[in-house]
Image 1 (tube, rainbow, N blue to C red):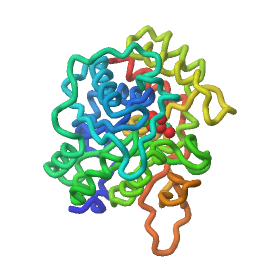
Image 2: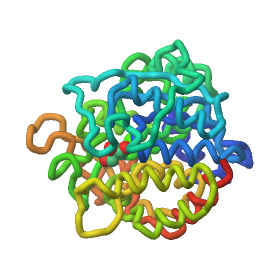
Image 3: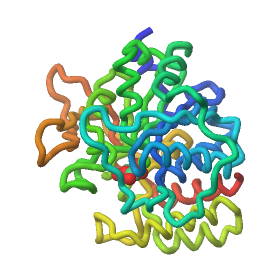
Image 4: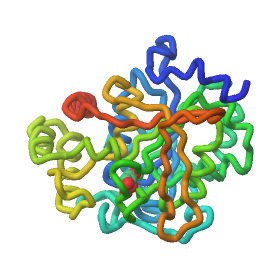
Amino acid sequence: MTSAACSGLAPNALGGHCGHMRKIIIDCDPGVDDASALFLGLAARRELDIVGVTTVAGNVGPALTARNACWVRELAKRDEVPVYAGCARPLVRPPLDARDVHGASGLGGLPVGVPAKGVEPQHAVAWLVETFRKAAPCSITLVITGPATNMAAALAMAPEITAALDEIVVMGGASREGGNITPSAEFNVYVDPHAAAAVFACGVPITIFSLDVTHQVRTTADIVTRFRASGARIPALMADLFAFSNTIKHDVLDAPGAPLHDPCTIAYLLEPSLFTLKPCSVAVETASAIAMGHTAVDFRARQGQAMPIKWAVQADAERFFAMLLARVSAL
Ligand code: BDR
Ligand code: CA
């Protein structure tokens, strides 16, 4: 079965999986907001079967993103979920990190410890290929919250692996909002635009949470207070992460609180009604120096052109944070 054949089945809602847990892989570069996304995913024990977490160079270097994923896993008491370290640099362009936004460790001001359990010996890309090859058709959802290097490399090695995927859910890109790393590019896509272009074109149904929607989900002072006041262990830690992000000078200065990008992906899997999605096609700029990593989003159905991607345009931030707090309080 080709992945295109999944599109009728791809549920965009957990109910579409007939009551079964949804199998997901989280490919990330923790990163303060990746950490929150991991906490939310790891808390969803009844809905999400996290087959594995893969890490990539992005917000900080590859050794730190791998270490941070293991540390978050340990804090969540989910050491049974394997973590695989992946690509150490983008496919074509030179590496670029975001230490200025995520702190030298990648996790803001948190006192990051050495996790008792480390990464698995296998490289993330080899593991992705092996896992997708073994999987039933349309049986796994891939969530990407960092540069898309790992999946692009896996696709180059074994293009047929798309058959295993029912959906790819991505944090990346920007249209209406403009960029955060350049005037027109968002960080994840800018860091590895060639990888993003390959993944967006792979034929699997893709849902994208760009800055257009993540800029609506902000950790205002009130949100920080609510998480801290909950009295629970992980929300208190997340309040520290939010407070750290709020000290950083942000790209969009006309709204209070830093955007909480990456957890939108997992929140969508758990509560699709939090978001409004619009079908579109997306092209990634990989040639122009000025517009490198720009995502050109077309919402108009042109004759003969497929609209294979769903682009989130609206978020219910109040419900999002209520859900996030309730779920991570259980960790
Ligand atoms: C994205 O870039 C990273 O810094 C964040 O973790 C998020 O994935 C936002 O542009
Ligand atoms: Ca990220």
